[in-house]
Length: 475
Image (cartoon, rainbow, N blue to C red; front, top):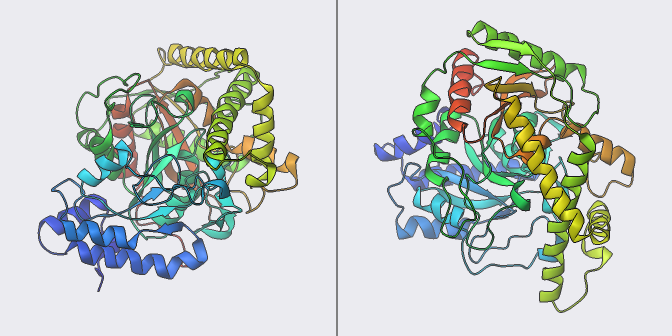
């Protein structure tokens, strides 16, 4: 039997119910599994069930962490769970089974989370829809013909549909914020150096990628970051120390903020009117809360951003693929990956060490430019995406319409990718829905290391315009 009031609680609330003895972790797990089994045939959000592992963790006894007994999903990308495949959404890795946990997974376990599956990701997280040849299409609970976003679309679809209240996600170009925007959720990308990547690597995509979660409530995201942040042993660098627990920050109203409102993408692609209107509405909401909002311009060298991103992502992906092919005792071939991934592989092979060094200098220069801009403002407000959620298939890595794929991809990341290059924290807040009933996310970016300020504003916005009870129609 499950827990009938499951929908009434966020993750912190569920942990409190367990702590008070009003529900058992087994009941919460049964409820999550039942919902997954009912909804997953339609949504395709969970691609690797881990029911035996979840039952074993309960039998062994859960630690007394802040999320004791709360069901949880890992994204099938970038993190390892011993004995369970990490496929990265790629057929070449379908049988790749690690013998150890990532440090982040260890921290999640210590927090008392009950990991019962892995959520879908596109191949290597390279696009803004969660579709792959290996696992198929993940659908948006708000409209099944539209994308759930990428690359953490499986996580976002599962949370939005009510399978669980919070799930692990990662972000190398917008992959926490974009799915959160597509599915009407809260999603924060932490600062560079905030999250552990050990014990196998020191950073993701040369610092462009990081990890955290998508959630319905702000406080869940804050508390999970408290439970999981901080450099691990041997990390190449840490983010600045936080001032106080993020959970405390989310409950505090911010001081009056100077907010720069930006309505033009950083890569030069046009912005859909729905997204502009949503951002203007959010600006007005911020003003009504006492903040100072000023329309501003921040001109980033789009060519530098594009070249650096392609070089860094392509280089990291081809390196991983070549290592896997070598471990299998053969050469990497075109049929091992999806068509757009193969194009990225070929492009990476044509670039030099000099190109890679230039790319690192490029993203660092962008980071300095944005931090200088943020000496005059506390935050940057914009749409999260350049357009509402696309139709399924358009941004898919196997779409034969390459120009259509690229345009959809670049439109989606037009506001997000720059903060992966710069390393600044940024969040998508679900403040608006368009006339078609699709969520439109609003992005806020802050100074390096200032996640606390973002959480303060997010909590204030959530109190002013609550969204957690706004749910998609039943699939």
